Amino acid sequence: MKISLEQPFEKVTDKINDWLETLVAMLPNMAVAVILLIAFFLLAKATQKVFVRLFDKTSDNKALQNLFSTIIYYLVLGVGIFIILGVLKLDKTVTSLLAGVGVIGLALGFAFQDVASNFVSGIILAFRRPSKIGDIVKVKDFMGTVVRTNLRVTVIKTFQGQEVYIPNKEVLQSPIINYTVLGERRIDIPVGISYGDDLKKVESVVSDTIANLEGVIRKEDIIFDYYEFGDSSINFNIRFWIKYPGQPGYFGMKNAAIMAIKEAFDENDITIPFPIRTLDFGIKGGEKLSEMKLMTADA
Image (cartoon, rainbow, N blue to C red; front, side):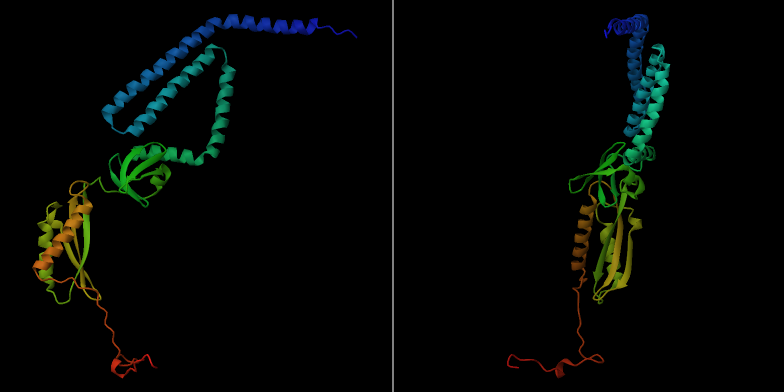
């Protein structure tokens, strides 16, 4: 049986000719599409720059600026791509593309739930702004200075010199202590004095010492309070306010206050007692020390 190759060859040739004719017919549209692509690319860049300039005049929130400028850039490009597909008479492709994006987005949403959660949390934090760059904060067990933020993590540099990357989801769901926002911080120092000291004199000496300490603010708000009878001392707290952050810093002021209180106690014969333990061998049910038989090495 003789096999003819002319018919399949003609079909292939006809198909190629149809493609060439379609290509030639579409050349003007393709030229327009290329021009539109370049135009929308330039328009997206220009729109992004204009938005950044306008945003800088109204806010210094860099996280929001980056978010919205990126959204505007890709939004303009997206509009351009759909117009270009229409020029190329690929309307059905647009519909298929939208359906595909929806399916892919759904799949990615399940696969990257944590990433999406951190992204959304980053947007919420950018609007709420519980802290900004340079603030001293405490999130969970980490305390330090906020050095940078983005839509995924908040970076804190601890006082020990390490950078901690905290996911925005955890930052949003955790209590945030901001030590900078009010510009002040209170120092609490517990102290104990002996039972033989004059309590009114101690209160006067300590309060005057702290009030005269350089760096203390709101001196009318200094708080002195006795809070318990300890085993070997009467204990009190002295509480006072300083500017924070700033010089002198928190630890420097606490150090200076302790040294000043100790020096004032020495000058006024006020005693900070050592812990004392009393052993009573004569209590009911016990045995007096004088009546106890001591064990010797020969026994």
